[in-house]
Length: 418
Image (cartoon, rainbow, N blue to C red):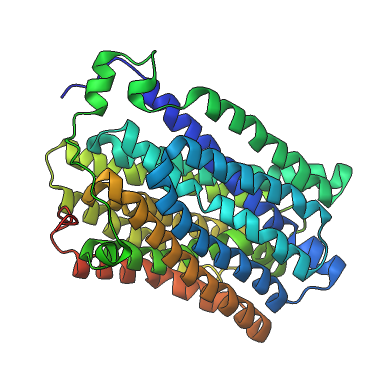
């Protein structure tokens, strides 16, 4: 079916992109401030790992709740609820100071932010046919890297002008503006008067099977669920470790301070952004050329795993910019891999079941990230070196690819209704 002239679906994609960007700004503020707060309040590496641990614990729990909730209340209300919760919690960080108080503030932040991806993927499933879905997810997911780029640029300026507490308050205001725009603009396709009949027909080109009420047992008994769950369990911890610890890595390895984090982090997340878009575009391009879904997605997984591998050498170089490039390529590979993995629930499950699968995968990723947060704290406290972390990152994506292929070798639609 030829692409229609209408572009409303890409406005929806821009809203999703913006929300993901803001969620990453809000979650990364603490990571950028870590060296300053660690010096001021005397946090140990294990103490900081504990703060990250509780964020991940709440994130994992919230994914289970929001995955099912979005299936029932829809993307519009589900996303609005998630954003409202995380914005209040994010701004509440300004009242914290100790490890315990920051951990307490991180819990509702994580609960709210855990709803972002289930709601975003549900919105993509509502607004995009399968042939454009990975590209749309890639573009929306690129917001993560834009948020990660903006944070080390905004936070030092605000902190040096008004203090670290203002960094949480100012960034929280941006999310309030987004929430107003989302409620004003987002509806299901058939509820948007400005949507052309041609674009609506294009969006609804894929057949939609009738919904079936699912139990957790039925979802967990499906092989394709475990392909997604295991993939997220393996790769999510690597991304979260980069997100929360990179400013500290540059401070300890290269002596950077709050004013110096920006340039290398911007380079890293620009590369991650490119990887996110190319990962979605690449598999979508293969599909457009007639390559089967199984082959297209798995070629993308393999290429992205190869791109990550050189990060094993990041600790070995004395050059700040070589290290930033190696980490940037790893983040690009991660994002490209993630885009195609995020497409799995909508590729293989009907829309009314995808949210539950997404919730389970997010919970698995959160559990893996909890374990990694504690392990990273112990490794850094004991050795003072990031080398073991980079070595784990280099091999994680091959492990994830192997697991996905073993569990779902055909990459065919799940027989969830049987």
